[in-house]
Length: 275
Image (cartoon, rainbow, N blue to C red; front, side, top):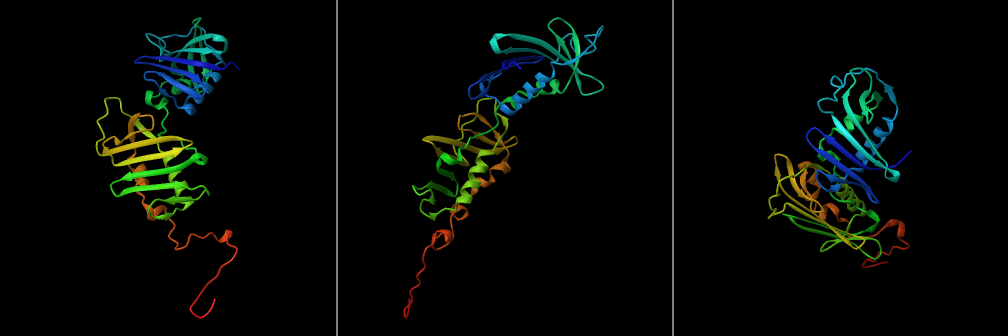
């Protein structure tokens, strides 16, 4: 099948635009931002499914949601620069079908959920992730909050250490990184974001020579204010940031000795009278 390179969706209230790049889909309108690749893949799948349908002769365009304005007018640019246009109307009253009108004016009933995929809130098409963690490349993680600074670093031997504390539990560090990588915006801030003068949390991750930063402010009615590593303002679920309250005792190894049983080759115990 032809690869879709660009998608423009003109809706009754707004226009959305997307371009496929080397690193995935990019949103061009109503804002410029990384796009939600998973959602755009579903849009493309729905477009592929709309290629087959049942022609409805003598159909009433007004009754099917095309006039005075369609639910969505779609323009696709595919391989070779070919442009494909069509309109999407209402859902059919029976069956899992949408009404579609091609550029010749013919109306079809097509299977799938095309209208649903094309009429989501604009924010849903934006990439929701705050930080993309490459676990193998991470060498430093810092969490700064009211209790203080948690500073974890990977040594040359691959072991994790907590500055001012001692050895870190690698499983606990990995769980922290997983929690960071799965944080999602629940909404985006569209006005000028108020300055976060006294951040509740500041996160810094060093991976592959890059320094990624997150800043989180107070909890509001919409959630906790946040700036992701690209400076995008938005909100996160306040409960999702609870893990950022961890300290050295949560990540550190409580053992007196930093010994790994699988690596021991000998154990010597010395007392006052014997060895």
